[in-house]
Image 1 (cartoon, rainbow, N blue to C red):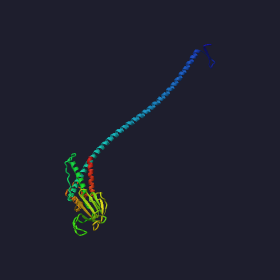
Image 2: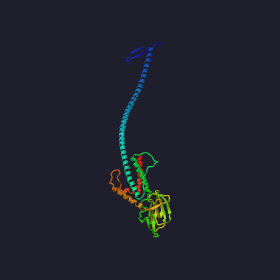
Image 3: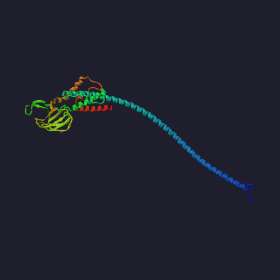
Image 4: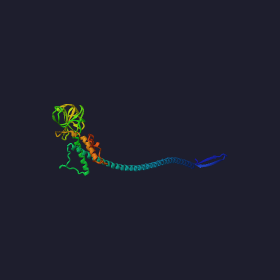
Length: 362
């Protein structure tokens, strides 16, 4: 078998060309062609893969650029927020400073106002105490001064604080004494039969009248003239329906000839409280009230005690007129404010308690 291949190529002009190729060269050429085609194909595949990867990388780079832009915007946003927070913090510090200044100013003003109130109230207490003591003196009730005892002690207070505390204790004592001292009238009617010797209205003989008879209509209201405890509320022979009150300081008051009583034994009563109604029970010639006042078991004339309310107004008026008008914290109150009514006493007691609380907080 021949190792050569004879190839005849005929042209358009019927010319022929002879090509002699050996089998080895042909195989080598085919092998080279196949290798070239394979390398070309691999190159195409590699190029395609590189293009895809390059496209992916470009997409990733674009995404990273977008993220970088977003990150930059976020950073700027955070920076702006930090600036805003710092600015707000500065404003808050400014506001806090202003509030602290305002609070300090308000505290100083409050302390000043509190001191003014305490001083004004203490001045009023001092005047009212003097008035109460004058009234007690006028009706023969001795106000005992507080003296230190051998078995005593406690913290030392400067004179100003000690004087305030002493004034408050004095006020408490005087108010308690005032509440338990029978003052004023049990009803508005005039006195029809005075205390002392008189002609008896039933038998016409001279006898001793241990109280006062007061004009009133049947059913009129009768009130207590001081704080105390009811020790008798029942029928009492010639006195008829009878109420007796102990005031715990040596004083007792009694109310006779009642239509009915509105309290019972053991009841605690306050000045001005309803205790009964006017009647004509017992030894009586008609509707009226027999009002009796005793000190340490002995009857005394209640007329002076009944006039004390008017006397307090007179004393207050004289004190105001004798003293030049004061300006400032310890200005004098008007006579109307000095009348020792139930409301005045209650108000004075309430303010005394308030002052103690204020001083404790201060």
